[in-house]
Image (tube, rainbow, N blue to C red; front, side):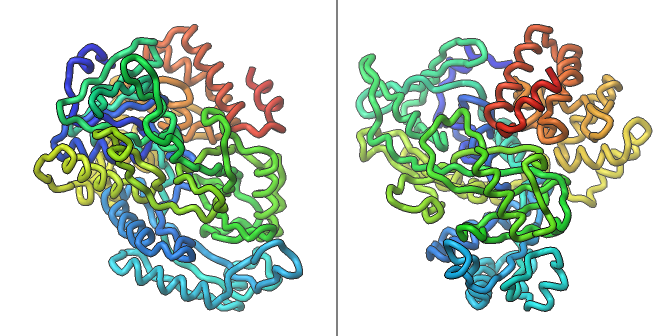
Length: 569
């Protein structure tokens, strides 16, 4: 339960605004170092940029072109840490780069590919910067070998290719959630659907944070300790947070609220298609030379991303028809047998990267390095804003931010634990608890379901499965063609702060990307919520309407709207 009265009576050392991966990382580190911490998020945890990425944990090979060697090294180091502390969520991923002869002058608007020697040099440097890695080193593939391994790829002007390893976090939302859970286990409070309305300022300090509970409409004030620090990790919304400053009852903007210069990135999800590779392809678009990925993901393929300047509504961001056609065309160009069409799209998602404002620069050339901005230079002594940042480096961002907090509070340094302390679900495939669980639940659940739950929750699967002991019907599959069980719905609401159907189907699970955008699953999901979570019929009807609205304005392509929505009305 959300005891807002008790929350208002407490004084906090750190108040974090924004519950994406970076805010979650700061909250975890701060709580583990003994700071009284609270995190608030205006929507759901990981509902913004954290769930809009390509779901890669990577060093950023193309950053080498911009000589961002420190960023690449930082990212590669963090990749190793995440492989160690979250092996149930972060797994090695092989990537393949086809290399084509430069034919830009004849056929395209930009260089199709870097020269073979340049790719080789980049691979050597990438291996050098990841000198402490546990993943295999790269290998170069000459033309004949590449054609033998990848027979379905476009062969014209192909000169060879390269293969190397990075990592993938298939369930990026759950990586964020496990950092939230870890922070809570260390004493932090984390609340979603609590929107910051006002940042009162007295004598150059923010004295508290005025919030509104979007679930009840109630307003509360979060009180800071005498040396409290406010952290703005709102991603694309950081400027909006700064516009909530107030003094003597008058609203004002804290400093120059034009620090964010995000770009829109869209992704498509399709089923396996003719010629689909077993490895991730990292290719450059034939039409404009822009790099994009074709990634095996949860039994499907994730294609993306675009990179467009964006100034629109952050609440309703959608892949438009032009972006969809662009990505389909480019896949068909590199894999002619794919023959993907609009009807092959099963899901789309789109979001804004929280990048530094860089007017005049091309979107792809804007740095991905994060900036911790100290608002002391703008007259506010206890506010830091995170500008930029990426999924891979969130843990290091948290460490840097908490170091800054302790210095600002003039408290003695305390060692960071997040580089070696496993996340709550951490478990290895050979862990004996998995076989013990199969022995215990094998008579009521299929082995495939049990393995699936461990692949989603890691060790936390034991808590989900425990619900089926109390109520055996919760062990039933949500749909005959899925391994997800009803216990996951109940666990999401009772233990994981899920309040809406979008929370449950889009972020606590992957139900939204299966079948028809999750619309076909709404009857069984709402029935389970009524039976086990106390939702009434009116609440379920309203939640279904909200879910359809979200899918319509964020995920379902315009040309599929009538077909999908009418089918399940």
